[in-house]
Length: 426
Image (cartoon, rainbow, N blue to C red; front, side, top):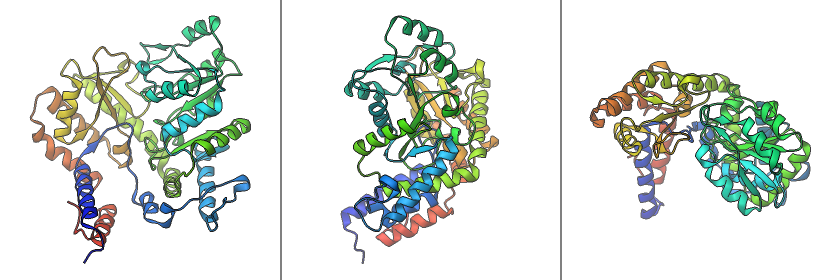
């Protein structure tokens, strides 16, 4: 006899069915990653329902018996700081947009001029909305369409006749290539704060496969911890400037109350995993993205950035308009067992293209042969008009190899569902 109410069982059955369907698909969304069994376990622990607030001196504030959670958070911050080259790391943000809000508030005063990337150039849609409502005068950073990177000469011309920015917020959630941070610093001068949103590239930075913003001229960085960084849905802020760290800490303490100790513990586990295999994973991610880009281009697809090697990170952009509408391409791939973004891409004429990310497949240890098979499926379904259902056995075989039904995570899930009164996943 289960103590779980019938309605709750219905929810769990639906969630189990969703999980099972997702496990059989290949996920190429650049903003998602896998989370190991070890990193999922804290959400079953007492930490999932507790508060733990580090305060001055690192002691827990107001809730007795939580100093052990605070100590783990401090250790995680130190580990992440070592990976990012940052002396100060704040783990209060609960998401990338949470980190974005804190940074905009802390790094620029009311009425200050701030520059960020326009949405048409790959900037995050929330930056301008939040910045404007925090009282900032927001302006577009100029971008060279030919290279999809900052046009520093154009920025220099803009600043010669306009207000100097107090803050430059680099918020590219559509990225292929690094930013010339040294050149940007020369243009904006020493007094402008440069904040680098590393939501998409955090794991590549930690693994040494992408530019290190804090070493190249950025004053601070922030972002989410679940894209190329294989952690929980959370956020962080980091800097080597003590004054900026104090400001970020102050504003974070007001923008975020409870910052979820179970997520902090999960991030601590992910950080340890990144110490263990992060360098190999990060470099393999970039190699897999370039290999997929070359394979698709070689099969007739229009892959953005081809002249520069397609990408320097986890993302690939496909201008699919010569073959079909992007939404139709996404639907066909989904029916074949592949999940991708159909989304507006910078500097293409079609309303949308396909934005791919290989980080989740790479964290699950997909190798070159898997990437080549993936390109073959894309070709069959999108170029050659094959019925997507005919490709399902191929994608399911790839997914099964990455996330086998006999894997430890699946075994633990079956035990948990049985304990709740459900005999197994759907």
